Image (cartoon, helix red, strand yellow):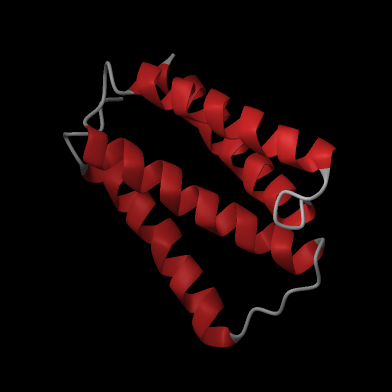
Length: 109
C-alpha cells in the first residue's frame, strides 16, 4: 500500500506545482487553493509512506518523479522548452529511481 500512497503523493505534488504556475504568484484564487490543498495532501501521503520506507528513498522518488512529470507538463501545457541536456538529466533521474527501486534493499518491495 505504501507504493500507492507514494504514487498519490507524487501526483498531488505535480498537480500542486502545475496549479502554482497557473496561480500567477497566488493572485488567482482557484489555482492558489488547488496548490495549497494539493501540497498539504501530498505531504500527508508522504508521511504515510515514511512509516514504511526511509526518508531518503521516499524523498528521492517523490522529488525525482515530480521533477520529471512537471517538466513534461511544462513542455506540453505551458510551452516550455527542454533542450538535450535537460532531457538527458531527466533521463538520469528516472534511471536513478529505477536503480533504487530495482536494486536497493532500503526500498522495500
